[in-house]
Image 1 (cartoon, rainbow, N blue to C red):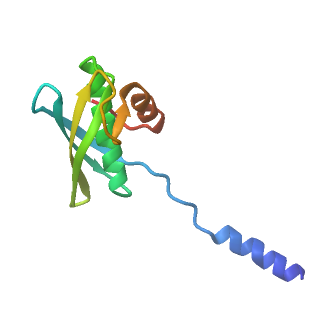
Image 2 (cartoon, rainbow, N blue to C red):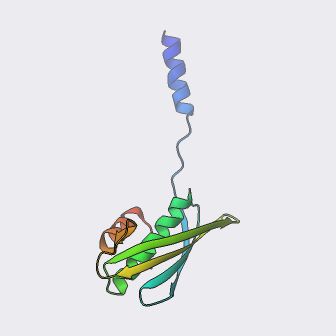
Image 3 (tube, helix red, strand yellow):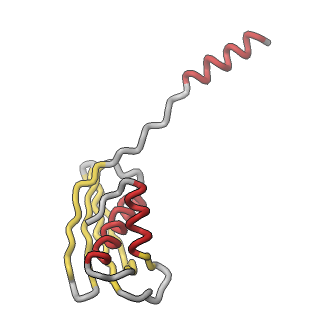
Length: 123
């Protein structure tokens, strides 16, 4: 019984520690398409999944809405491509002072705070 316990403890020590997530954010390009329609192009290395790229674009949109004096943004679409270890997102948002209709809305202030807590840069 003692040998089994020692073997179990030894095997537990062999388990790999999960690697810390440390993406490299490569920049945000903002393109104003109309008064309230904005494209955000983001690039990053180390994205675990498409959701990481989407979050980066969402953070950019939220900060941009605040910079322009608006409180909300509504996500319209995001296209994502990966090449050579770099993930790129091309996202389109509308920004507005009032809560827009739809299900894909973000409160800019809340989102910017959340982005800061997660270490995701904004515009």
